[in-house]
Length: 219
Image (cartoon, rainbow, N blue to C red):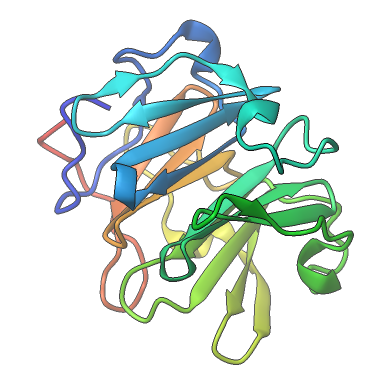
C-alpha cells in the first residue's frame, strides 16, 4: 500500500508488502471507513486497522472486541461492505449477516438468510462492496467466479454474472482475480482494491461502472 493510494490511477496486480505481517497477506474481508480515513482488515478471529494517510498497520485485536453489541456467533467474518450514505457497515458469515450502525455503535439483529434469501443457492459470499460513488445505489456480492448486484432503489437483484466482465486481469498476473476474490476495499467511491492471496489490484470506476486495468506508475 505504499505510496498512499492515488484514486486517480488504476493498477496492475501486485504483491502486498509494505508494513504487512507475513500472516496478514491473505485476508478474509475488508472495508474503508471515510470519517476515520481508515480501512479495516479481517482475518480469522482478529481485525486490524490500516491508517491510509500514514500507511500504518495497527495491532491485531479480537473481532469480538469491535463493539459490545457484536454478535457472539460472528467469531469470524466472510465479507464486509460499508454503505457511506447510511453510515453503516454490513458483515457476512455463512448465510447470516448483520448491520453495524456507526452512529450510536449499534448492531442490528442477525439475519438468517443471505440478503433476505435473495442470493439463492449461495451458502456464503467471498466478498462484498457498496459502490459509494455516482448513483450510490448498488451493492455487489461476490462468490467464486460470479457476482450479483443489488439495487437499493428498487430492491432488485441482478445476476449471477461472470466475474470476467469486471476486467480483473493484468499482463503481469493474468487470470489471478477472474476465478474469485477474497476481499474488497472501496475507497471514497473512486477506486477499489481487490485482494486475493498475497496480491491486490487497484481499479478506478469509469462512468459506465466498468473497471480499467492499466499500469499504475505511482506504484
